[in-house]
Length: 401
Image (tube, rainbow, N blue to C red; front, side, top):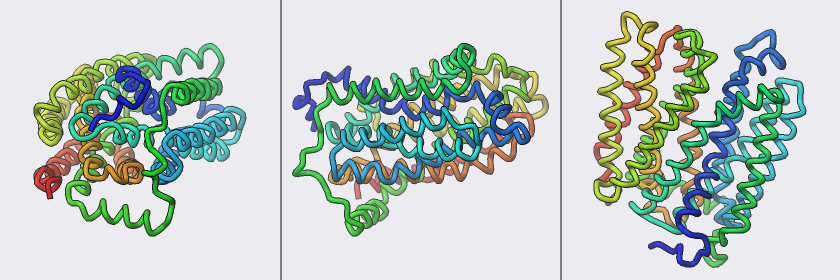
């Protein structure tokens, strides 16, 4: 049931606000990509490869914080949980801005990830509070369409900020972005979770909720598929800059290509919003994964003997991989959370935490396969895609169980 009539905020503004909440995570990762060389030279000159830990530490903190953000929002309200997460995020960003030690930088980024989990996860619970089913998937798709604009422009913004004020000033941009979004939330959105519907934080209730989700076959399968989809994205983000640099000698123009492809991929979320109500979430996800496996197989065959001279083939593949996110992630979230409306915050936390942490664990060894070409990445995507299709085959029947 749509309950946005109880809100003073309109649907369009609501979608934009949720997109801004989602974007906290993407902005915190993608804006730093152009600065990896500078970060390595300043805080870990003896081992430049360790600079990538600045990204993985954030993802680790995000996965850890994701588990707690939802239950806290169930107990104390959605807005309170977002306020707390944003406060932690801002403090950690300020500390990271000031520190000159790699070890303390990693600690700060881990804590920053914990804080970012508040806006990322609780925004999904807010959408579930106000919408359900295919309409929820439609709203998430609209929000994802706007959200894609952030990773599209974040690398270029990061490159511009670095050129003007150095890589550390990126943390100032993180702080400013968070202040704006949380002020917007506080002024325009009424608390969507009434006190009567809140669940106190008790270990037995937490374990009960986790057990309920684990026993529901449709929810369980949706989480597994989302994990595999997220693993594809994380593996790509881990290897994308080295592929541009080592494989194609395009490091200097990386942020332009990355941003342009991310911008084009926003059309996938818009397409999903238009078709998901008529076609259904399972069909959209299954067909998208099938197309990914077929396309990746064809392009991998074309690149097998000579990958260095087929840069634009790789760009086409990257575009479709990014489009895949817009056609799957929102739908999989809706599938997993549809039967869990009574524990929406906890459900959002479990889905987000499991898919983030396990996906990072899957993506990490894939990154070690890098050989200067995109071939190991494409091969890994094919394997993950086949596994995801296998898990999707009975999900529709399972969700009705």
